Image 1 (cartoon, rainbow over the protein chains, first blue to last red):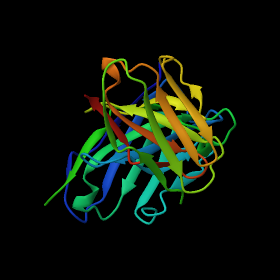
Image 2 (image 1 turned 180 degrees about the horizontal axis):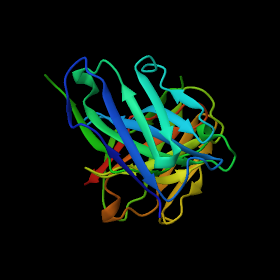
Image 3 (image 1 turned 135 degrees about the vertical axis):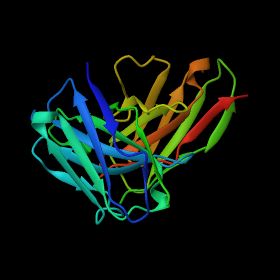
Image 4 (image 1 turned 90 degrees about the horizontal axis):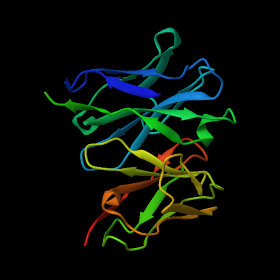
Length: 125
Length: 106
């Protein structure tokens, strides 16, 4: 059974750096075609894709947020970490991690098939 | 970046109704289009991938069609558990989602 779980602080102050961890089971990020992505959703608003990392350690970022984001993986721990710098109240959202399984080997061409439950992050002083 | 739009933004329907939601991409995305269902307080759930392929375990009343820039999600006979928000997402390039369509009870 594939599961993902997000963890991190529920509250951060403006200008601080947010660090979120996605811990997963049921698959390995060292397997060809496996990828993990981060997506967020402000309260009452739409989903916004943030970043993706694949089994080969290739990384992709949202154009609008790429200067603030870093994604990394620890294959031995089955974890993917996202850091977002210079947090602002507009970054208040539920942050999800999700898996992509790409038989073609190109994760950008496949869907998010399994999602974590999400973690709510509030940015406030 | 590829922009996604959806119409309508919301709709009211009754159990048993046929419901159609449209998604449009700002450029051709071939068939790289996925549909998700999200219920309040829950994570999105994949329904349709590659425009028309039904995800395992998803009821057959859900179907998808389209290619290029215009896509459709159809629910053939709306069930009580289908009241939710639906999002399209392109996977032609770095991912982007549509703004969502909320389906509520008439």
